[in-house]
Length: 145
Image (cartoon, rainbow, N blue to C red):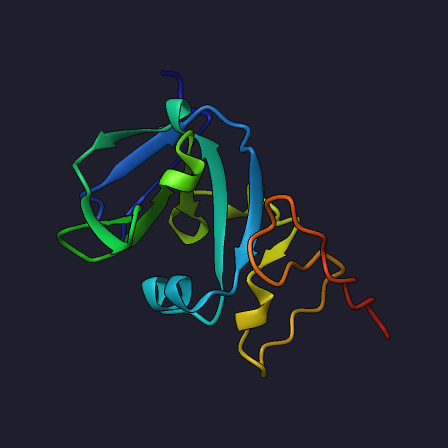
């Protein structure tokens, strides 16, 4: 596979690559993703599973809820991915592990019903109370409103 994009963990024990482009890029505000990343909001790049591969090391997998696995580096603990039976053909990569996260701009927010009240993100992106799959977005707050 010729790598157009890559990333890895903090210590370098894990490296991955994918040719791109992603299926989607978005923010998740759910408690599970916050706890997994240690941040007030998580950002993910959704990829077709068949385009993603590890080129160095093997991650540790943890079943964080039924039919949901999160992968991380067993040496430094960096969270790498989210995989779910619900989206069996996708892998969701934690944006912070990308070599060039600036190349991937989020286009929506999901699970905003769980958003931390003091977190204010000044964008006009669609917001979904739960998952965005087949749902209608909440009208976004317009900048300057």
